[in-house]
Image (cartoon, rainbow, N blue to C red):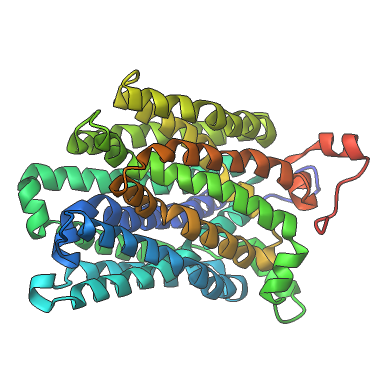
Length: 452
């Protein structure tokens, strides 16, 4: 039996098995990346004194912990460039396996790091070094996953694959809160503060090793193999990539801006924010985040399925516009006590999910195969470093200076990014062709060139 192109399709079972291995390789890495990265953020209030000491204000140790959290993000663009080049030359599988090996090793290093009472200021120095190493690896992880999923997902289910692979980040966050809840239940708050936090980083290292094993069994992207076989030589310089794909670069920046600020506020910092206004106990709020993350994961899967069923553009238009309208209302309601924390947390999480659900393939479609990991990765990592990784530090600094009321306006402004990014994406011919956007041709009579 042949398909419409006159070719015989591959056997159903082997192809289905290959798809499962490809999706598993992408998703398991996202789980570990998110767990390793976010377990640091949620545990920062518990290990800040151990690694960064106490301060007269009572918060300087926590500020040091959040500053190190931000420093790790600064290393991400460098990792995106280095590993992105490897991903675009040696292959997606090689880059994914290398990055995950480094992530696991750095997590184990944090788990066994001596505290300040033992080695003094070297505890903080080594913690910073471990986070920088992780930042380098994480910088190459996300774009390699996005490139791999974009190239391996079946066309009819590409956004479902996108939501599952990106959903691994939510699963990792869910696990991080679950591990913290388990530690608090078994060791108590004082036990977690007094060294119990180290067990979470041991779990992170073990999960990383499991991900390496899964990825070593995954096949290389067939699209990448074809592109490498047809390559005429060296890859173009990075600045040339940015210049020739400037609409794609701008789109990635805008989408990442809204996604990363929304993620780190709604799914990481929100319990601290609500506790600062006295509307909920921090530990109670943190425990409830497991429910929020489960709702977020379900919403992401639904948004991916809806994009495959009804098309990306109508789903994105609705999903990207709602946060702009609802985020300020929800945050004002939380602060004034009109809305309970649980309701606000769930709704904010669902709004973030509508942006994240299609993000892997949405941004992957903006670049050609031969520069996909590099072009997507550096812009994505630089934006996350500047706006996402710095968010807990910024929020804690505003809190310390009695300016936390500025957060709702800042978050709302950033939510404009994905809505604007949908407009700039329609300036990229390959994206328009992939998702089907006849309205662009109808307005202008042609599809705009990538170079504008």
